Image (cartoon, rainbow, N blue to C red; front, top):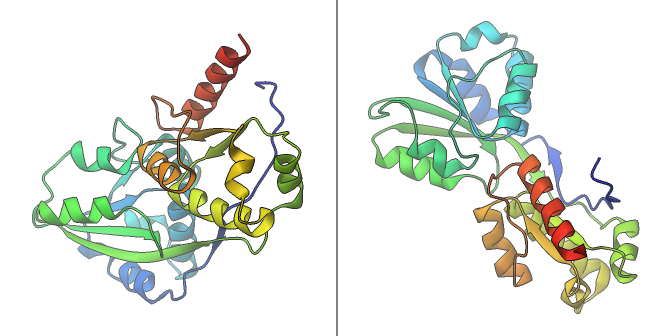
Length: 238
């Protein structure tokens, strides 16, 4: 809709966790939790899919309040037949902690999450506030084996104006894929490419691995990122 040509460079592959034991145990103990914390669309889908595979349905969540990070996560949750009880005003994990609607001391919070990496701030802050946070692996995100050859060719030929990142893990994996596909001088291929990041945590990873960030939206969502890129393009062409 914005008139851009998108070159896809997949940097994440979603898969099952190495073990379902933690999540299955949590599902069996759902009545002991006060809140279910879902920080991504993947967490929503993998959690609900596993709930159904365990022979339960959405009624098993009737005693739980659900908090989500971001409008996209909320939208996916609603598609699965559930409405969130709380969405923080800013679409980052820190905002969930800062604006949580009730005191969590003495409460058990269930946090299905990616197996490696993820939202450590949630666990640290809620634990410090007196909650018992039960983290369970609901899915894993890995790096593809190889970079998409069309994306590599576009970078080699100078046909990329902006490279976008929606998570820290995509920054890490992209760096790995570009080094593998373009060699030790891969960073030089990005000298004329603007680096766009969805938010502060991702920007930190961009600065660490890529040396800079050129575009970061005021609203940390994909829509916000798209608007920020459009504004950058308009300013650059003007």
